[in-house]
Length: 100
Image 1 (cartoon, one colour):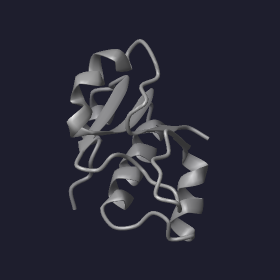
Image 2 (spheres, one colour; image 1 turned 180 degrees about the vertical axis):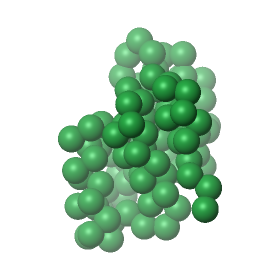
Image 3 (cartoon, helix red, strand yellow; image 1 turned 120 degrees about the vertical axis):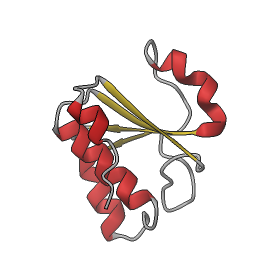
């Protein structure tokens, strides 16, 4: 199994951004969650709100944060143009995963 985020951990990156084909992590109502902490991940998994391909992404987010990566965001590839803003402000696209 390939572990996403290993490069960010190994290089001691400050930031990890996953460019994906989805708009971000969605809640039970189907709305994108702009900020999600690692404690909430387990709650969303146990209530089956999160499943499938989002599971390995969120696992990689959690591992990266636990191993020193400062910021992690799941960003839709269609919004790649906001990446320069990511360093200076909170962007409103995708989901940023925070340490609980």
